[in-house]
Length: 182
Image (cartoon, rainbow, N blue to C red; front, side, top):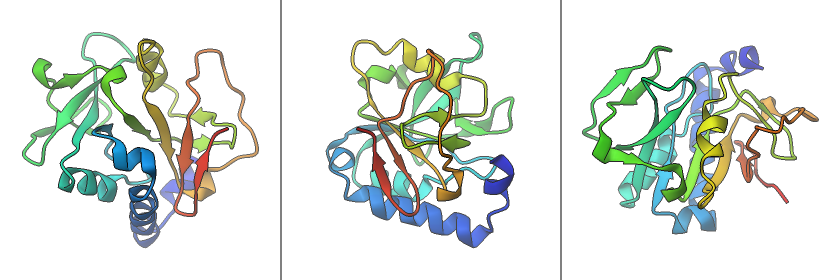
């Protein structure tokens, strides 16, 4: 699956990013949301940047995941501004600097857009294998944000095995459709 998404041309990548933005701009949950976590694409992931730019333009508070430097496989969501300085983490992915007063606990977010390697229509997500989102969101028992996976349609599979610690998605958006999980 990773090879499939990496094999997409730049034009196909751009098309998916633009189509995701067009699709989600009209989604009522996105329209109402004020605090949204995005990610910066890596390794052929579906690009949320056009949607991130729309959210900034609309005055929504935007956050990006940052690896916790002390806790393995844990994320923080740090406020992102167009003036934010981005640094590469240990995987070479750009992220904002970890500044305490800019961290949002996951339960304070309305939506978390998540990257994925593969997905099924039951809302099961195959990530990169580190469990970062699952571990971070397991502690969000106060209030769960809407979890939306962003993907290229070619990343869909018939079914994935779900472990007890896997956080199911509420929806998946591809360049073709928005799949709401029942």
